[in-house]
Amino acid sequence: MQIHELPLFPLSTVLFPGGQLSLRIFEPRYLDLVKRCARSGEGFGICLILDGREAGEPAIPAALGTEAVIVDFAMTDDGLLGITVEGRRRFHVERTRVRNDGLLLGDVSWRPEPAPEALRDEHALLSVLLARILDKAGLEHDGVGKGALAEAAHVGWRLAEWLPLDPTERQQLLQLDDPHERLQWLLGRLPDFQPE
Image (cartoon, rainbow, N blue to C red):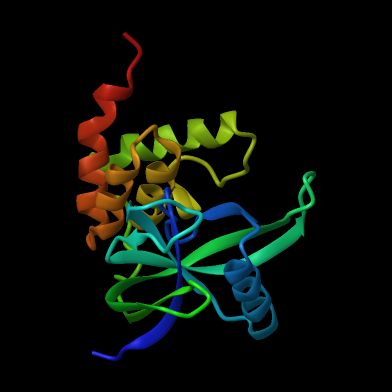
C-alpha cells in the first residue's frame, strides 16, 4: 500500500467524486493551501468533520474523504476568496498530524475505483429521478439511461449529492466501494422522500 501526504480540509459536508463544491477561504492556513495548490495543480483532501468546527482549532476528520482539485476561483461579495473544487479520487486517512500553522496533514492511501459499470435494470428508476432533478436545476444531460445517466457510479454519486440526506448518510455512501450497493441503499430510501 502506497502512502501519500495530502493536506486535509475538514468540512461539515461531503464531496463526492465528480461533484463540485464552492468554498469561501479566509483562514491563513487555507489561503496558503489554496495558493500552493493553484500554483502546483495538486489537490487537497476534503473530509467530513466528526468532531470540532470548520474554523479555529483543527477538527477531527472522517477516515475516508475525496481529493479536491480547484477548478475556479473568484472574490466573493464580502471580499473573501471563493473557490470551486471538483471531487476526484477517494482516499483513506492512515495518520494525521497538525502543522505549526494549524493545517492538518494526512498520510493517505488511494481507494481503488471500479471500472465504469452500466446501471442495472432494478436501478433504472434512479436514472429517471436524477434526470428530473437535473431538469429542475436547469442542468443538461443526455437523457434517461443514456450517457452518464446509464453509469451506476455517476447516478449514485449525483443522487447522493442532490437528495436530502444528512452528512452522516452521505459519508456512509462515500465509504461504499460497490456502486450497485450504493444505488440499492438509495433505492431503499426513496419512500422517505415522497411527500405525505
